[in-house]
Image 1: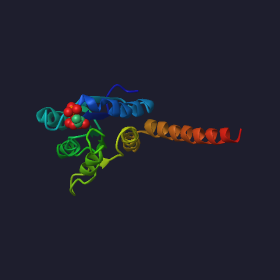
Image 2: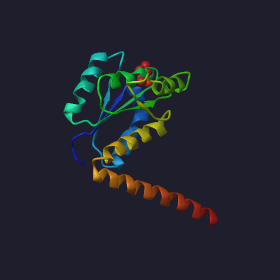
Image 3: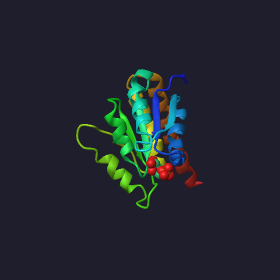
Image 4: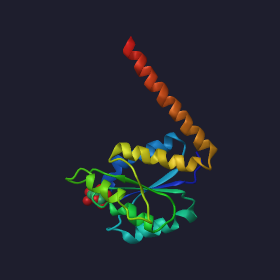
Length: 165
Ligand code: RP5
């Protein structure tokens, strides 16, 4: 794994970590270096903007934003960069993350964020989707993704075979 982080993961609160750790795990499995920061769009707006503005120059190629109650984080991140931004809605409110999902997926035309499913599945897919973006230019990542697909298929077949025993 190269040491240069290619993916920047932001989350609005350390309380989002349990979910966003799944993104980190997915990237690690695929051998992709990343960095992870807690940075809030409303509690630390300057820190968030400064990180995102510097990201491309620092070698980051994809940004991932996870947030619950403050789902505007993904839109704020996207506003500050033309790098691809992936959003992970987190179940952090009495609306169980549906509020975050709708806020993230309904970005007005012009500033897109690629919105994943609510919670851990979305967080894992954010890592895999970031890898897929990187795989366009990076043959090593493309190979790692292909191997992961083979393993997934083999796992399904093994489970199916086990049912017959
Ligand atoms: C957002 O509000 C965070 O993204 C988190 O999901 C939610 C709650 O944050 P805390 O008040 O628990 O720090 O800012």
